[in-house]
View 1 (cartoon, rainbow, N blue to C red):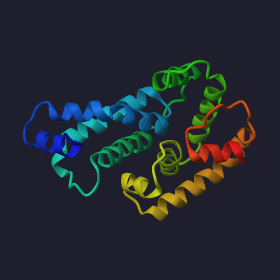
View 2: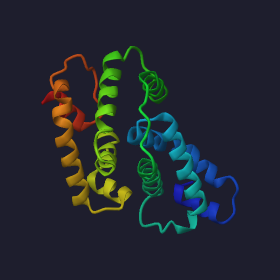
View 3: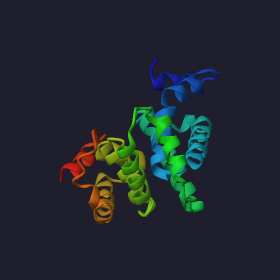
View 4: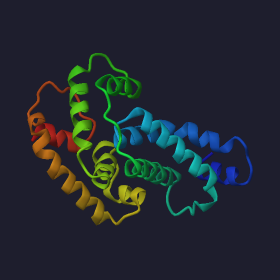
Length: 196
């Protein structure tokens, strides 16, 4: 059954349909929220808020985008709302390590964790709109057009936000450019950063 079918069934009163949507997408929504906010507690709250909002407003889904795009937009907006309402408290290193282990358990990833913590700290220095665009495009692998759909802005705006964000991050993260101890990089932009 497709996500759209499940959403239709939820709107029609099926008590189990929405929980299936949550099961299918909660991990990816969690990853987006965690990378956007950098704080596991705030990310969990944002995802919960987003799913509650999606549950209540399911009948507002117009079907002109995929259900996942619609959910991503709600999650990103929940994150941006949290960032606007209050500044996110600094995250302790052990919390980031715990979150990384929950997200992708792998043997000794010390170098990657260090880089991940540095990138997360650097992302917190960016304005919320630039951070959200970079997380979707560079970290989650969305196309500019798909990120624009999630953020509800034109593709040119996403390109501009990414370019400004990358320009701000470049001097902060320039020491990572020639690291040879990184065994894998999860995105094309990350590979560009690593490989110069």
